Image (cartoon, rainbow, N blue to C red; front, top):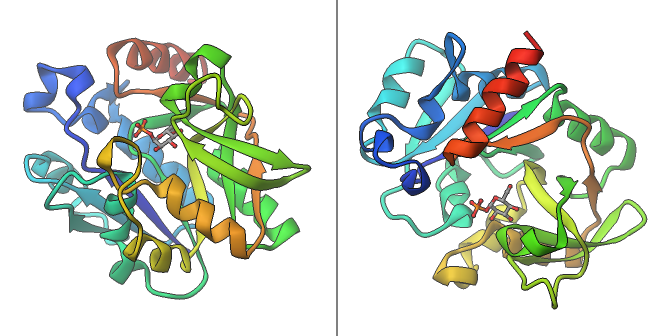
Length: 239
Ligand code: G1P
């Protein structure tokens, strides 16, 4: 199985340090956060990892260049998460399922990816999306899903609290059929004028079943100083 780690964002919420240090390379103890995410992917069964980086993130390449399991692809323009994942299409290939682990989402206390893989083995279908419950006033920061049992029947990127179909948010981990690349290739820009992974998955789940998995670990958003401090605390408690 392959895994894609999008790590091409500019880290604007964590300036000025992200002018020279990618947010994914901030240390959690002796290791950069990204190494913990790579570890999660490998533990879940990924034997090849595709990192999507942008210019200015050479530090990531330098740190991981001796790891034979890791390949790098460049996202030349910042056109959204869906566009970033699409850059990995050739490296992933057209068959089977692959993991997506967002490079700024650390999960403490459990392997979210392994839980997604286990759920996929039990349910089949075209994918499993990691979910978490969020306060209603924060739904506009996330992809929000509508469920029917274990199945996701609809999803919308960053809705207003009034229009959100639930308070269940997409939480940084995905297991997706490679068919999603076909959707991404023709995906029109959505929220914020960006090519959204959420919109492509919405088209995928209209054709084939996609499950939701409220994984047991706690996600930390290390893209902001507050989330980073919380991640340090949570990871410290698990040492
Ligand atoms: C991305 C996704 C969103 C998801 C979020 C957290 O948004 O587009 O659907 O809920 O990650 O995993 P971003 O935080 O990059 O704006």
